[in-house]
Length: 291
Image 1 (cartoon, one colour):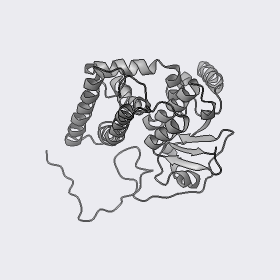
Image 2 (cartoon, rainbow, N blue to C red; image 1 turned 60 degrees about the vertical axis):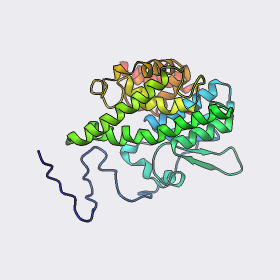
Image 3 (tube, helix red, strand yellow; image 1 turned 90 degrees about the horizontal axis):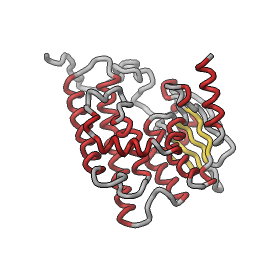
Image 4 (tube, helix red, strand yellow; image 1 turned 90 degrees about the vertical axis):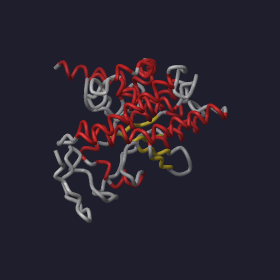
């Protein structure tokens, strides 16, 4: 059947249109839409985020750093509700002019330092604390290879496949087929790589694993876009093995909870200000669910 849409000669913004649940907050210009200061907690590291795959990357690293004994990695994590447009508040835009989560402010120095883009935050923290980023030139380069792979590949999965398969009101064969094919190719790249190595960059657990797993690991476990059966994710056995191994890490389990406000109440920790929050908030959530 022929597509009835014919692109105009000059595109103009039809506010509120877009065919998905994000239409009300999407717009073709940048900058703040309202004045709102960001809260600041007691720790030098202040994270403003949400437990999407990009947000989870950072909280996993922070929890892993704390588990390794890096006391300076203590942090406050504040939830930014992107569905309510909180990423367009003046305070958030000041630390990330691109209005995307996550964003970090490091207040440990003479003046606050902003860090935005999840990959940049991972590198910044790994270098700051000297962990999860190898110093050996070959291993370091391989880690960066895969970190950059993730940063370039995930928009195909999230902005491409996820939007057309899961979010679009009108399903269209061409974009779904196009992006499903590419996502399966990416899964195949990972699966073949993990067939003969423990972690994605070799024998060490690195920020590359923390970057890739929340996207492709979650997809392989059927937790992303409800697309497991559609993409036959059970075929990628090495990706599933790798994901299960990382999911089993206590720091990863904690990191996946931070800034989460949906799903199983026991998995939610909307804000995180201290390690004890995990036990306290989890029990509170379980109690609320039972009432």
